[in-house]
Image (cartoon, rainbow, N blue to C red; front, side):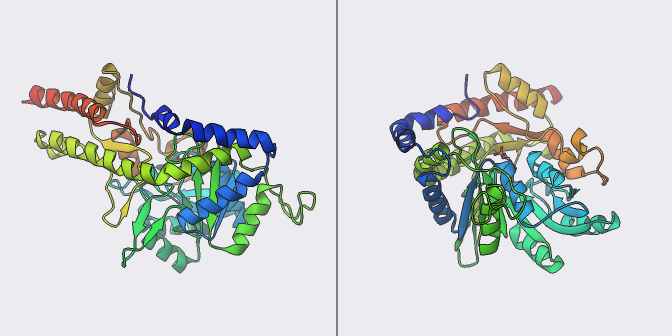
Length: 391
Ligand SMILES: *Cc1c(COP(=O)(O)O)cnc(C)c1O
């Protein structure tokens, strides 16, 4: 059986370092806010090029904390994409605020900046105050922050970058200067859930910002709204710390991340080249397999490698019969989820169409070409059979 994401391959590679890191924490015994936590924050901030990094309990809390730092609450609208993991939307609703959806660009699967303007208008129509935007870098691909930030500046909105799937993904500026995710907005968040590009061995997350006062606020929120200490509570907060053991593990995993990031690019290229050949055998343009658009001016973190096809379910079933796992991200856009049934809003045609066609293939930096060949061959079998049956 081929694994969808092979975490064992990485573990085998760095097991002695991880064992030593965990043993180090056991030896000093500072399980909460031990020295590894501050060290990891420094390493992550340096890697991303951000002034501040605050490591936290998970990627969902990171989003909640960002919204708390902007003092979002009832009567506020936060504009976001419906084509995301529910956590993005949930964080907004848990603050008592209202998510207003802006549809995606079907090629990138990320929020379409043009739709944000429309969503601002709809927020006001509903009697809400549009406060900000949460953009998601879906499957590792950075959203279009040049345009998102421009609209947000004009409309006086904050921007939160949900980089849960995109840690370390890159965009290149006009002088080819590199900007790494999630450092494209006022606050960026990420997740260290084990299956994310940079994962720990449990739950974890981080908040990034270049703003000193927001960083201070997030540090306070992380420990019950602490002031001078945790018994001097100056605001409502959470218990949202990252365990020292997870920090120690992440310090080791971050060391090999740059290399894994490069391998992810290679695996994606191998997939694309092979699937492109399959596409050449498909006559009807509608039936061709589509990829997530790759940026000319950047690089995805490839949290997932997705395809879009009208034969999605046939493909998934056939792969399964060959022992190849695949996953549908996301079967239901947030605007159609039961948890959002009380929200008003128009249909989201692009998200709804993509949700019927999308399929994620096995992907991780240790995927070899033999396995890629097996996956693509199985894919080709479905497509060629349907060509013949139509012929
Ligand atoms: C995984 C994920 C989250 C939540 O992260 P957790 O660490 O699981 O809480 C939020 N947003 C997106 C887009 C995600 O993929």
